[in-house]
Image (tube, rainbow, N blue to C red; front, side, top):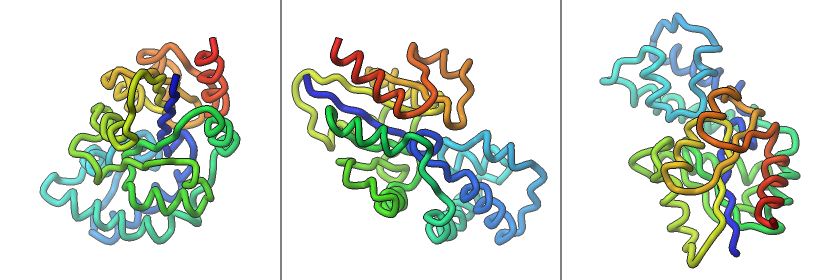
Length: 217
């Protein structure tokens, strides 16, 4: 049976926390917004689309896309220098590539995500990267997963998995009717992840090993 593994990015394969937080502060300063929250407030929202994050952090709906544009302009410049692979991420991708077809489903901008994966020498393993600009409804809506599977031209019976670190990934997987594994190396809390999947592991390599074992049984 054909096997498909879809990976989230932030908190699942990469750590770009510093880049994200510093870029939020840059946008606040550039657009003269007095942010009264903390870095932890920003961190708690990582995984959501940028517009949702800004709204939750107090930005008015009328100007939220100005902040998103300011964010993207700077993030593209500094993201490669301030992003690193999470432990075991490369090993996970290399192992997954031996028995499954791979793609990325993220709420980050797909274009910049591809550039980042190229920089990390990982893009060669993935068929597609579905980002925020590629869908109308981002995760936790199932559209990004359906879109990716359509692009991959899935035919016949397939064993399909989503690997992610937040409830957004797992809810999207459930809504799309595919399997999921939650990883604890990112931003989600274990008790929250357990509400949406039966499989919780420490890192992406353990996730891939679990999928391989289940697929072979």
